[in-house]
Amino acid sequence: MKEQRVAVDRELCYGSAECVHRAPAVFAFVDGFGVVRPGHEEAGDAPEVREAAEKCPSQAISITVTDAPSSPGRP
Image (tube, rainbow, N blue to C red):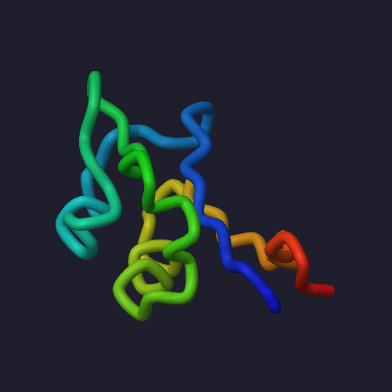
């Protein structure tokens, strides 16, 4: 199974808060920067998260597709 992880690069983010506006359940604005809310790192497949990544003016949001860890007892 594939997992889509979302992250915000603080080095690139300049605090437009576009991500928070587009996906407030996933992103927060902390100390002048956008961040991914704890527990929402795997929300990269949500349409509003993809839109936030596409519309981020500093291109600070990345979505990475990886293999999800398998559960014990499952291949």
